[in-house]
Image 1 (tube, rainbow, N blue to C red):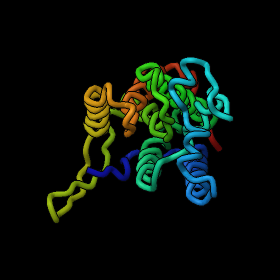
Image 2: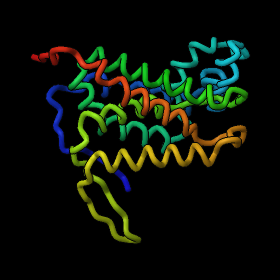
Image 3: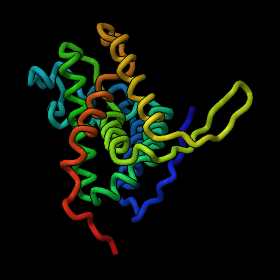
Image 4: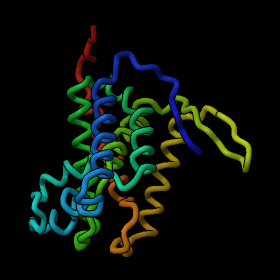
Length: 224
């Protein structure tokens, strides 16, 4: 199941959404080309739970700085491509509702909430967490609350056959968050082996879902 667009057109040009996508892609290109190597980049700029919880700087970059730098790093092409696809589908409408600057702050806030959600649930982990997934999860949390009846154009595969269907956003995102919770519970205790930071996704989603109404401007911004 691959969602690729929704049926709610943007009222304005999603400047911040596009800028975030461009920055993430450029950073990924730098990761793949830098002589220091992707693993060393992750160790230097990724968010390491133990360092964040213990306020211990075992990195050249301070732990607090890695909370933000980690949001723009990715572990592979599919990682960055999948994240940017979801940001493109759902980010523009949340940016419409919040306005450009509020949306940027909301995105970063969701990312911070995701990083600390993972760090709190895995305080001894020395593995760096990277990826925009947590921040984008906050966008999904906001979207499911503000646009639950939106239809998501989704590509479904049936063996060698495929079909495009329009599925309600509440089902697409609801299934997604259920998968994150279940996967997080199943992977508890095995974080030292690496993999996906499931609880970062859950934390970002909850942060976006719970706080989005607080971020909405009292009067929706007008754009020329």
